[in-house]
Image 1 (tube, rainbow, N blue to C red):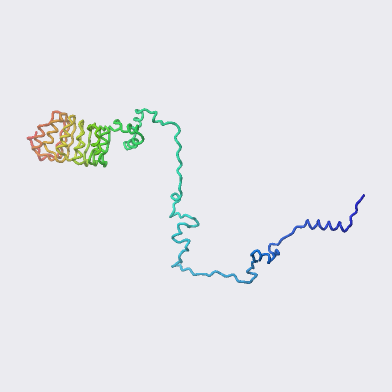
Image 2 (image 1 turned 180 degrees about the horizontal axis):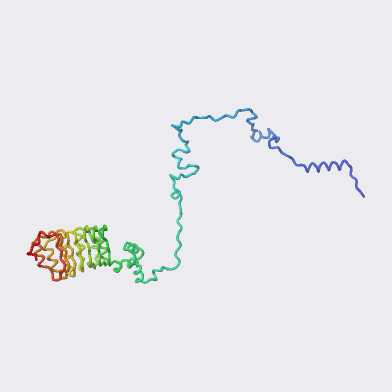
Length: 331
């Protein structure tokens, strides 16, 4: 059985399906049909085109720039703000250093894995390592720990010390002597007074100081007579002593005479020397082999007394500069 629909009804459905398939187009430049009363209720209005309104566009005023006298910079680029804005950057290369501006947090070092290798080493092995270090490095190593201080100040590391031409503050030479030095060179050095630190006199537990110096060189040294007396007062085992161009006193010569093992004595160009000082030295230093009295301005009477007191062990004598005082009677 076939159902036949009216032609009017079929044509109506076809037209509705064709209308639904069509797409609506909008024009960007055209009027979208906005209702002005509706915009007024929303507090808006339609902007008018300047060209459509016929209003001419205003041109900015032009100003003449004087090359000789340029206008001041704007407030943004004045001196107060030049450090903030420069070439489009917030920081100026000349005023602000990025390394100083930023705060960096130092990375914390991790603990070294394992134990201390030096704790496993014996004192003899560490001393063998310290023996290759210079003296100023030993002084720094002494600040590491108590054990390192004891090893760094061991007498075997300070037997020989050369401080020639140095400027030594008061108390420095005394600390060197307390470390057990045997050979000390202070030629052309400037030695401060006092030799030993004054704090040592307030420590009753410290025994009387007795140095282990055997070779002492003070040639051309800038040292006061009081400091020289203090230095020689703790020396009792000197074998070779040089006091060239130093000032001598009776106390200094008495301390020199305390060294009975003295073999070489250099008193060239010394000031304040007389025969009474030398006689005291010659009477106690029976092992003296070399004596230098050059340019000491000794008189003929002084030389006569000294020549009669020479020990039998004397082998070398230097009396240069006494040409005018020498005579055949001194032979």
